[in-house]
Image (cartoon, rainbow, N blue to C red; front, top):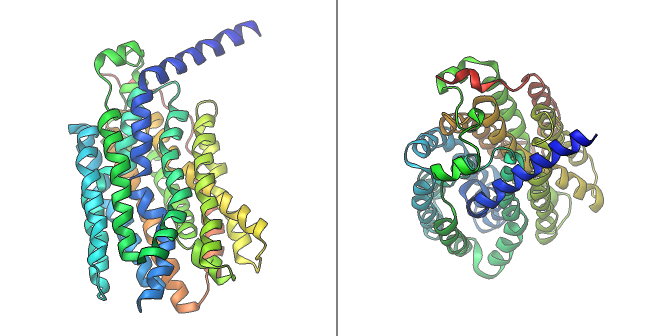
Length: 422
């Protein structure tokens, strides 16, 4: 008992030491992640859908295609950015991408009645703002943290939860006062003012002296790993990727269509946005809870629990349930799952493959995430245009969520990356 307490104390001291050295980079990462492309544009899109639909003759399916373009573009941009981050450093890439993201988002002001212009802005934004994707922020956090990597990643990606919580409410207020086009401009201005100074001052890669002080150089699992080519030969890469397609598809479809679904159930836009904001609160909780659990438990088990949970939300939403309590529960579960997925991706990539080619591997796995998350909004919107409901797709979410959990449980133990030292 005394011996166990002693070792726990040692681990706690090591974690505290990592936070003492890396807290500034951690704060910068959290702000950057919260103001990034996959955070702001994704979590506020549901509010914009209803406003744009009322102001134009575009259908929900047509409008949802915009965010699908953004996410699917990551199939190309995420691996590319991962390689650039590995080569030039995350800070350099971030400081270029943040102002470009604001500039691209502001371009929605000039979108007229031609929906192709709307799609063009989404495509442009996806390319020039790709450096704000999670691979940039998690790369630096993984460099600073090893013993406390799970909670550090959870804190970093909790920034997206903050955006998911306050973004829909803030955007709803902007739209009511300024219309959807001007709201995009004001949103771009807001995130640029918040993120650029924070990232410039705080977000920095560790120097060799920091790594030595943090004992990371002495830990091969922290800084080495398998090559990109070797990772592609193993089952873990493909199991993680396929599970992400299933999980991200269900979660993305539910998040981006939550406001329209609730409006269809009789809720006002304001009430629907308020209920949907519960997703953001639970995203934060999901990030932090999962982050803590990852440092103590087998990651695939945590992944299976959280990524399969949206089947419960789909069961609630598929029925004729308009109870505020039940709807709130479904939103919270969606948020917890959304909060878990990118934490899990970053942690699984670092533990199963190491940091040797982390950028390339994370970016490549993000492709699977992008396929699921990117296709779902357009699929949900198009299905609604044809059938006038989401029933079949909600049943599909039930099945795919459970399948993602099963695949995660097939990953096996963490490999001993020391075997890959040359």
